[in-house]
Every structure is written in C-alpha cells, then in structure tokens.
Image 1 (cartoon, rainbow, N blue to C red):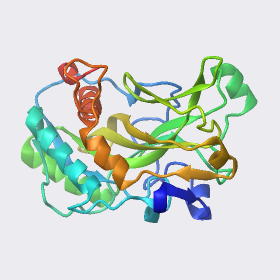
Image 2: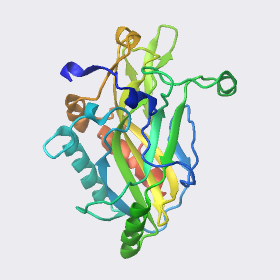
Image 3: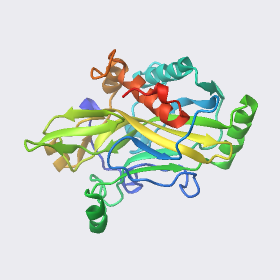
Image 4: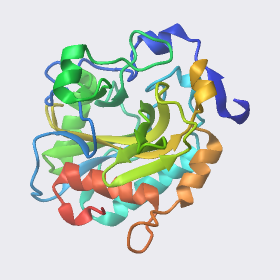
Length: 297
C-alpha cells in the first residue's frame, strides 16, 4: 500500500455500494435511517433489564472496498491487538454475558452498515435528489441500516442465548467505512463528525467530494429471532485525503500505523483523558444495552 495511497479501480467495490451488504435489510427489525449528524443510532431505545449476551468483537473485512485493501487483522497485527483489547475491555465492564467464545460461528451474522452510499460514481458518494436536499438541507447521504443474519446463524445464536439465559445479545464489529468531511467557517476549515460527542479537525486541503476513510465500530442488539432491536455506529479514526488526490479519485486507506496510534490515542477533551476507542465502545454499549452510566461524552 506504500504510504496508504490507492486509486480505487475495482468496479465491484464501487457499484456494490458504499456499505457492503451481507444480508437483506427487509424485515431486519430496524428500518434504514439517514442521519446527518451524530449520535448515529436507530431503533427502539432499550432499558437495561439484567444482563445481555455478547458475541466477541471481530473485524469485518470488505465492508466498503474489496477486502484486499483492508489491513491485516490476525494475531500479531495492530488490528488484531486492538480487537483483543476491545474484547477484554467489554468483559471488564461487567454488563454482558460472553457467548460462543473461541467457537467457529456458522453462517452470516447481522451486518450493521453505516457510511456514505456510492452506487453511481467510482470515487464520490451519492447525492440525494433535489427534493430530498431541500427537505434536509444537505445533498449528502449517510445511511444506517442492518442486514438480517442467515438462518443458520440465527438458529445457532438462539441456542447460545437460551443456554446463557439471556433474551438479547450484542453483535459488534470493527470495520472500515466512508464518511464525509465538512467545511466549517469562512476560511475553509474541515471536520469529520466521527460519533457521539466526537468531532475531529482535519487539514483544509482535505477534499469535500471524496469520502474520508474511517475505522469504525458498528453494533446491534438482537433478539433470539435474529431481529435487531437497536443499531448504531461510532467512528474511531479518519484517514484524510487531499484536494489534489480527491480530484483524481485517490483516497487514503486506513493503515497499520493508523491503528497502532489509535490503540494509545486519548480524548484530551474528556476528564481523565480516556482512550479514544474505549470512549467509543462505552458509548456504543450504553446505547445498545440501556446502561447510560457507561456513556462518556
């Protein structure tokens, strides 16, 4: 990947949409939503009633681009270490019951999709139609949705939940998606709204038309029928592109160095300067489990 620059020439990675789908969103339990700003959540708000099940966090390859562009995630890599850190952290919070640890998961799990939609251009995100733009005040579209799990995954997960005595379970993944850079003020400053209470500034040379590559957490609370109750996303780190690069369709991709730096990056705007990824994970868990005491914002 040499410095992280790519020229996305794989047609299947583009015209399959900005968020790769592994399951139909029809009758998924939560309808598609199109949030302009965080927090990025949809579905029924839940109230904590006892513990919820928890399937170990994994990295979902190929969520946006061809999976060959994604960083390696096996043990010994920065991404593998980050995912392991996250699983240990969830266990330490004491609000979930681990399910299926170290087991081979059959079928296709629920697929929460969040990011811009690309179906008509190789490099730019789709725009809403003029009528939609007038109604919402913005032509850009971010889509939050969930694909239903496969039948074999649902049957397997229902058995795991029943055995643990929990009616609902969390399915959380780390993946790469595309967000928008926004302009702020008259001098052209740029920002990316990554998630709950978390907006980062990026260089003014960042193009506004080319999507910004983001490593994010996505999650769903599902019941034993495989239907989603609530879904959401929290961005972790954005990879910035420049105006010149954006003009020719190039985009930065998330690198091993980005992930290694993320493991120790801190939220200096919050008391105690907690780790960026821990704040995002706590906020995701708070929204999906109905435990507001977990939130940090």
